[in-house]
Length: 179
Image (cartoon, rainbow, N blue to C red; front, side, top):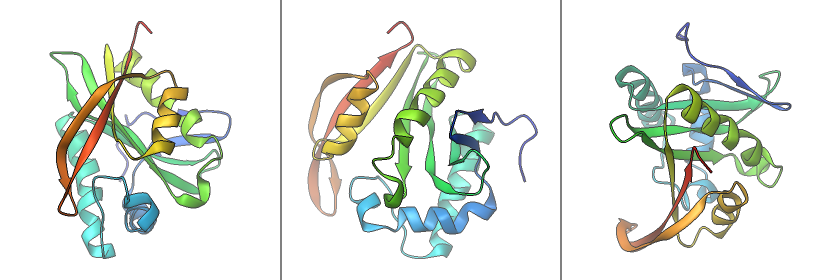
């Protein structure tokens, strides 16, 4: 069930809308796909497990610690992926941006169209000053995309996380409201 006050963001080709229970299968298709989860922080083996992701999106909204949108075609007939802000820190006016797309929609400019909508919402409606992006150092495509959107590379956190029993390094990017 949609919250009446949930913000819908639109661009020429995209509608960013509230994630609904009906999106469960699409989210499973994305967050179980080997190419998507290769650099993403979560993955699921069953559609039942994926319910945890839907619950996480709802919890962010309820606790006001984040907001995620389903990224869809403008007419809402095609689900492309999800993106949003989490770890909202009101005291320090910052949040972390997250994003994933189904592989069949990669390299079509969708990220470059949706990212600015999310950032604009964060800066103008959530009163953020800083939006951070954390990207696995080996995720060259994502790094290239985030740099195109004028996020500034701030450095590498070496071997700061363990994924599949191996240390991974994370590159940190940011965009300020004043940029």
